[in-house]
Length: 257
Image (cartoon, rainbow, N blue to C red; front, side, top):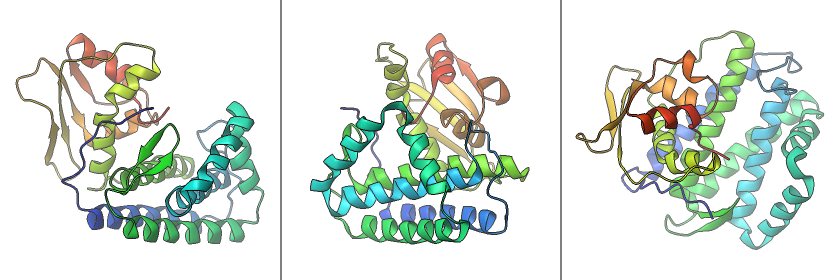
């Protein structure tokens, strides 16, 4: 079982949900204005339609996990049966729908997910892939995925994806994903704490970790989020690292398996 190990207890659910909804609405406005969803995105083999279909499918899985958790085993079995090609096949099936149908499916699913995550008790766990989650973690996870796949669409259309304060949720997941990053790379976890200092969209500083630690990461919050979601290579960012372990982390950083 994987555990992000992140304490998000200081984040109010209503605030995080507001940001999740806003992130979805921003992407909705972008894709609603684009008539051609067959344009290829940076994800190999994926069009804009594939990106939206993937988000819609993930929302459907969240609803099963939260509202009918006993049924989530069927989701896990389906994913296992599909193997490494499951995600691509799932996205392709959704992308084959008429644009208007897929858009409405995604909109309805987003609304249902927001309602479900607003209603469930904060401490109540529900099944997810390889773990048990709560709304406290699922809300920023959905925001992160919406933002990351939205970035692919912005890149496809050549439109600047302007950063907002919502990125702090993504950045926090990226910081928490350090252990996940080393696990995925088959490297031992690092007991030493890290200091992360990021510059937010308004020039503010977002920081995690002890100030006197030797392993340090600095840069813009946007570049950090692009890096941990694998939307940019390390060389394409302004991120800097002090310490060998910190540098290694930036090379393998991720927020998902």
